[in-house]
Image 1: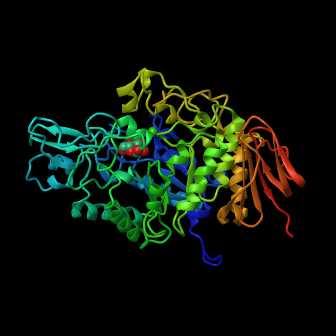
Image 2: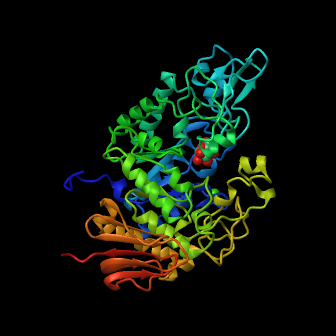
Length: 533
Ligand code: GLC
Ligand code: CA
């Protein structure tokens, strides 16, 4: 893109995922809410984020914590009101922070009036809004598809004698995206929110929206298939990722393009970079951003990560912009998964996220290095933990409340109130203490974000991998900026570097002037600026 064309805000910006139930509780019921987000905008503004992705805030029976929607337009009572959401959009806007909502187009709740009507009779108005099919003559489900959450993807509806499809819980029936009314209705939902000032959507389960029109059986998995497919024993050929999905993505993009400054980010959990690249269409006609799961799932290893970034640089169409994230409400937090609780590693991971070419998305708590918190089974909230314990503990460990202060209630809720999920060690990791300490993780993240703001190299500059010792990773951004990471216990020497250290992960070398090279200890990161000339 020529330098004189203004870049969209989300390319140079930093996004931040707020898991609303666990961010801040304004009314002392133990559950985070929208007013709590408003109360903590100071923190986000001080940190320097440009946009907030709110996990689902609309009505839901909460079989899957908001991802089973029963009303796409009304805010859930326990999280606030539509007026409060408007107030959040306005208050954030005054601080130049945009609000993105989580849109769940793949499925609704069984309690959604559309599904209630759909299952009421085979001839109901909304029957065709969902995926209904007859079982086999032997009494088995219509095909062999397996739910992402395990077990058959079909449930028999006794009343009408047909099966409905659900790629997640049985409480989450899949919508039929071959039905034009469904498409039109979601256009209207998007427009409603755009009109209310929402700056975009994170699109849930974006890869699955369109299914095979013939509902064909998936073939058995082979050694060549992904880990997930091998685990489920079948290749995910017909239940997701159909070519016709791209018609829907183009439709959404052209709708979003009617509103200035909006962004669509897909949850696109594919393991193949070429499949990921395809979500961008020709570069500017499908999703603006597609979450990079190969990167999220990679180990914190120089070769593995460098290869993924090289793949993205190779495969993405012109104009497509990458997005980098290390944690979310479904994945173990990066401070645990990538860094095993070692703060030096966490800093390296955060430096990487915030200096690669693309939009970083931080998950709440990443900025203080918050780790997963072990939740005792009797307090499990995630249906997956409840269903699969002890084989799998579910996703509660990464959804626990934010650690604001080392006080009773954690600054999250009132003293004496039991939060909906437990805290970890508040004294060891909290926002207030880290804010007082200029050498903290929190200040490091803030400095990285601030650096991105003042450096067009870091915000927009091209990525080029540079040679570096084994276990390290070094790249240049734009004209003069270089990033060096050591992803190993050993020290590494980076040759042929002159310039100034702008930021170093242990903060002791900020401002150091280099004379021909840089030696970094194990698990360190440094951002440098080459001198002109
Ligand atoms: C997405 C959400 C996850 C949810 C699932 C079903 O993967 O991120 O939390 O359980 O969709 O809606
Ligand atoms: Ca509350």
